[in-house]
Each structure stands twice: as C-alpha cells, then as structure tokens.
Image (cartoon, rainbow, N blue to C red; front, side):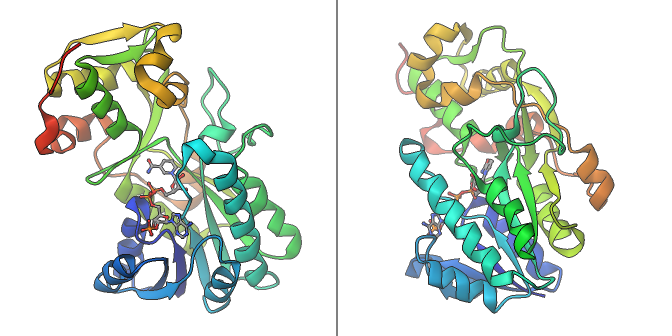
Length: 304
Ligand SMILES: NC(=O)c1ccc[n+]([C@@H]2O[C@H](COP(=O)([O-])OP(=O)(O)OC[C@H]3O[C@@H](n4cnc5c(N)ncnc54)[C@H](OP(=O)(O)O)[C@@H]3O)[C@@H](O)[C@H]2O)c1
C-alpha cells in the first residue's frame, strides 16, 4: 500500500515509518524542512513537501495515497486552541481527499479527552465535549462523507529512546528542583505504551481496522504516578517527595495538570479487535533500564 504519513519525522512517526516499510508498504511523508526531508529519505520513504496549515499539500498527499496516517500535531501547550483548530482542519482536508473511497485514514488522538476521573477509560468512552482537541470528532464526522476513518488514542506516555514527552519533562523537573515529586498520595495512575508497540498498532489499524473505530495505544493500563517519581528519584539520586495539589502548579508548572490526573485506560477491545499484543517493556522497566538518564546533563546541578 502507498501510505501518506503526516508527522513522519517525529518521535512516533519515525517508528511508524519503519514499521510500515519493514512490512512492505511504500511510505510518503509530509515534511516542512530540508533536514526532515533528508532524514525521511534516509529512512527509505518518499518526501511530500507541505505543512499542516498548507491544506493543498495535505489534499494532494492524501489524494495520491492508498491510505493515510495522520500523526503531526503542533505541540504548543501555550497556544493549544490554535494547534487543535489547525489539526481539525487538517483532518477534514485529509478525509475530504479520501471521501467516497475505501482508502483508510488513521487519525491520532490521545486518551486525555476521553478520560473520566477514577475509572479505566475504554474505547467506548466518548471525548469530553469541552476538550479543546477535536481530532476524534473531526475524524469520526468524516464517516458521513464516506471516508473510512478510525482514531488511534495514544497513552499520555509513549516511551522509548528519544522520548521528549511528559516523562522526560518530569525527569528535567526533578533534576532542576533536586527532588522527584508526585502529587498527593501518588496513587492515581498513568497509562503508557512503548513506541514500537504503538507503531505496530498503527499498522494493524491501517491494514485491518474498521471504519469509525477507536483504538487504544495502551500497554500499561495504569502505572501509579508515585512509582514513576520513585524510579526517577532512584536514578537521579534525589529524594522522592509528595506535593499537595496546591503546591503542584508551582513545582511542576503546566505539566501539573497532566501529572495530577488519573489517565488509566484499557486496550482490551483494541487487542481483541485487531489481534494487537504489546510485547515491549513497560514504562517502569524502560525507565529502570536507564537510557532516559544517560544524557550528560543527568547530574543534578543544583539542589533547593
Ligand atoms: N509522544 C507521546 O508520548 C504522545 C502521547 C500522546 C499523544 N501523542 C500524540 O502523538 C502525535 C505525535 O507526537 P510525537 O511525540 O511524535 O511528536 P513530535 O516528536 O513532536 O513530532 C511531531 C511531528 O509532527 C510534525 N509537525 C508538527 N507540526 C507540524 C506542522 N505544522 N506541519 C507539518 N508537520 C508538523 C513534526 O515535523 P518536524 O519534524 O518538521 O518538526 C514531526 O514530524 C501528536 O498528535 C501527539 O499529541 C504523543
């Protein structure tokens, strides 16, 4: 299959490109810089110049493909509303180019918008209408236009070498503050998936997914946030402490909003429907392996 991938040069996308090429697919990735074009070509994929705000580039990329995987997202938490609107328009455009055909579109979303505090989120849970990210609603609305679209919700921590997401941020904060903290009793849980397992799931969704389905890229259903703080504390050799909800914003900054929430989720239906079986190490095992801490700046520079 000729597959058009947006976000092909990012943390998740590079693994998806590798997974698709290894399975015999031809991949063309959206790129917006010479450096990205070079790395994508080196990975064995074709290059399609454009960006999320260049809708014509998305339309032409999708029109020439047998299937599309949309992963790109402008990760700007300070302008999240604008990034979410850009994403919504990009999805509408990609889906419009596939409408009326049987060519699949897999849209990336996150567990967060569908999360219900205190319960395990399943594929049946619908997103909170107040969530700014509308990837899912935009994707599933395309069904009415005859596009074969499904949604892949990623866990808040997709982990592996090169992770620059929430866990890496927690490590940086622990280094900077000289303590590794959790919020409250630290019993609320985070779901997680290894990047290679998630990449395999994208391929299964592309090859055998159903229209209007929601899939969960979740391998660890729920890792207590206290355990995450403990393993970070051990590796950085700093004390592990609890912060109250009132103290959390000052300690963690914007990430307090995410680290303070329960985001446990199940992928039982995904595993049953697609035969997906995560085989890679879990989040704690991956942290214990140490590569998250191998950066030269791993020494704690200052202690408060
Ligand atoms: N990583 C996680 O733990 C995690 C967890 C939950 C959900 N997600 C979701 O997964 C998706 C990918 O995450 P990631 O960690 O792979 O992000 P990433 O490493 O920052 O990669 C983002 C990718 O999107 C591309 N991109 C960003 N803005 C673009 C724009 N305006 N036009 C064209 N391309 C653009 C980037 O291209 P350049 O190479 O040119 O920068 C890059 O290829 C996002 O939707 C994210 O919300 C990730």
